[in-house]
Amino acid sequence: MTETAAPEGIDPEDEKLITLARASRARTGAAEGAAVRDETGRTYTAATVALPSLQLTALQAAVAAAVSSEAEALEAAAVVTTAADAAAADRGVAADMKTPLVVLAAPDGTPTAALRS
Image (tube, rainbow, N blue to C red; front, side):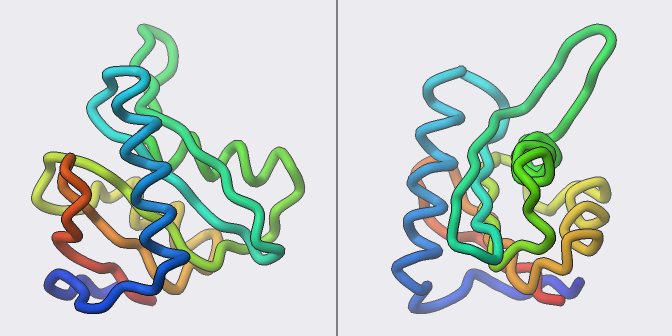
């Protein structure tokens, strides 16, 4: 996956993913929130999981929810984070799911970068 600067003119469906990711993050007070859309258009959201015995990024958790619901690929994903770059684990799980676009956004919803496969 290659990272580019903040995408201009994000698709409205991808903007919805950012909104869902922001809500997931805000609801739980987690470090990150993520939302993904699978190949059938279903969406899944999650927040960072930080337990003593289980550590997942928000994107890993959202992908786990999608996969457990039989998703085979993702159309797009959004991660709301204060980090400047996507975590290596997020790049890996996005590649595993053949995700063509992962939008990174700031907590206020402003897109900051895009990862494209």
